[in-house]
Length: 166
Figure (tube, one colour):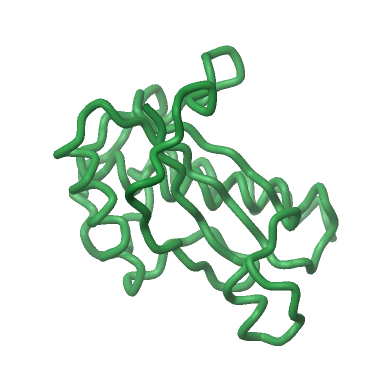
């Protein structure tokens, strides 16, 4: 059962990478992105976190449905604000942090958190943000916004957050 899910997840990731990101969401340019543009967080490059954290600006987290890394059209405005800021302030780099609620194994949630961060990254690239300015990081379930176990609490923990660096 788990193998089937991983195969589905891999196919979904390739569809995102090859098909231009979250093409079903509003605001995407509709142009196909090539894998080379989305590649490269990554492990061998300097991490943006080594720079100075920008704390005088913040953005609302992008929220995700349960067990999903697809960006809902209701979240598009949040991403458009981030893209607009990055267009205006060119010396800032972005780390998209993916998070999950507490359900699922640690490994599963780290993977899902990374896919959420990559979906946000792909969407921002589709809005014209230079791919070299965006890295991703997954925290899985390790950094919840709220410790509650209600549906509302869990919904807040399924998110992509934005960390800005100079």
